[in-house]
Image 1 (cartoon, rainbow, N blue to C red):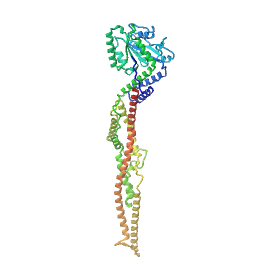
Image 2 (image 1 turned 60 degrees about the horizontal axis):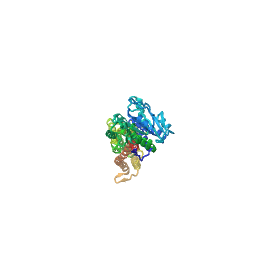
Image 3 (image 1 turned 30 degrees about the vertical axis):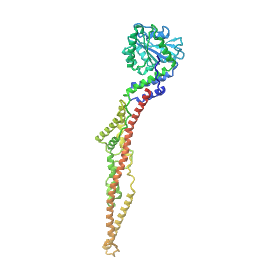
Image 4 (image 1 turned 120 degrees about the vertical axis):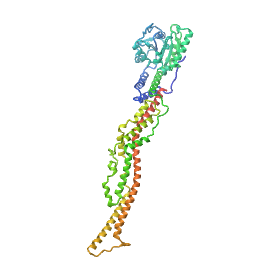
Length: 528
């Protein structure tokens, strides 16, 4: 019979790093206990790796009356441990040392004060520990067992025909240590009390129970300290174990895998697929509504028409535009600003739609992700909810709506209008001069005509008509331009709103999804 070995292709250091990373990533997302346990495993591994690797700490654990101490004495070659009859007598673990040189720091770390040196080279490097009874009526005894079971390199569970099926040892110890099959050995002691057919039946039943515990391939040795049956085979297995000198690393690998499994279980298990990237078109639309983008777009169109008329309208009437406020100036959006705008606050309906859109994105991003990570993803979507309204207002305020740059053709039309206005004044002035000369009975000036119409009248009326026609044409062009300007401003505004959605909703979700995906990867590495 040989000890079970399943070496992973991933080094122990890499697995421990992965476990530590997984614990850090899970901190605040899952329950404290598995996170603290994982960190304790990493710390314990670092401490054990710094101690003697030439010694292997093997613990004999079992129930009251299982014969642990008797087996301990047989292996140590003398009456080292006190053997009890009806009550547990081992209150503190004691150790038997083969080749004790260099074992002191390891025993100090294990906190085993009672040490017996065995003068034999058969099991060089072995530190054999006799633990208290795990079912002792003394709490301190059980705590001592729990402490050492968690740190020794190899576990030898000593059972007897009467108590091998006791639920206490299977549920409290063996089942939680299912990952530790490589560092577990089971001894069925006191077989001298059974006939051969009963021994086989007990061994078969014990194998069944161990399989249910997840320890299907654990070696099982029938032993009798009275007749000596199986003792030599046990010594041979221990000799093989200590000669390999890597039981300590196998134990740490098992601890690492078990802690990773615990983290994964606390995280709701492994996902069936990667987290989904949420579609945030509906979110962008809801945020745009809440930010007042439609209002601003309409104001841009009106402002464009207002400024076009003020720049190209008929000079006789355009001054009336001064009495009509600029729509963008009223909203404090005449130019990009970092201050607050004068946009009205979002209505209750708009706020409700915005909240619903944020929740929908969080729900979509968390789809397929087990709890409690799904809750963390949903929570991340609303992480910056309180500052979302201010961020939207700032996004609108700093948007460059392109209203500071006036088209060049506006200047040409404006020059034309003033030229027409000057022509109108010239015609009017000419007519006034002619009227004054006639009124004073002075000689009249030569007045050319355009057909039957005098030129002063032609200039006056023609300039007025053309000016009005140009003003009407520019109004139509301004209306077309306002539509185009509104579309451009809408794209700018919606892009800035989308940037806010990315920064304050989508990016936190992405970070949480990435954190979860990294956790899964690290936990898998540690658990492999």
